[in-house]
Length: 164
Image (cartoon, rainbow, N blue to C red; front, top):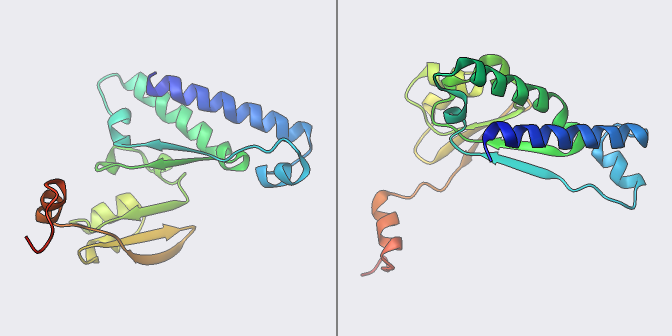
């Protein structure tokens, strides 16, 4: 399936869940799950190399994807559907779409400008190796992330111990 097809399917699921919540007079998936015997699961949608899907020659199709994703992001959290998106080129997404994500994470970036694009603020350019800057609903945290060296990855893939 294509990204547009997947987004349309998710949009339909969001609308079905919203109709169900409205029918049961609930404001959120949590409230619905407390009242109902038929619990709704939380759904996580993962898009890797996110920017790849939103760049291209066909600008009408790109704009259609961006608008569809924006429409989904506006209403999806209420019904327990979340997105995890990764990109090495976040600048390809417009600010309106990037701001729809409450939580943002960045490793060290080369410039102040890149930090602003990814996080909406400076800071990621000052990180040390293996640090990540997490912005969650405006709160900032620096967390350690595993960052193996290329030699470590090669050694692991070859099945060698550190002592060998």
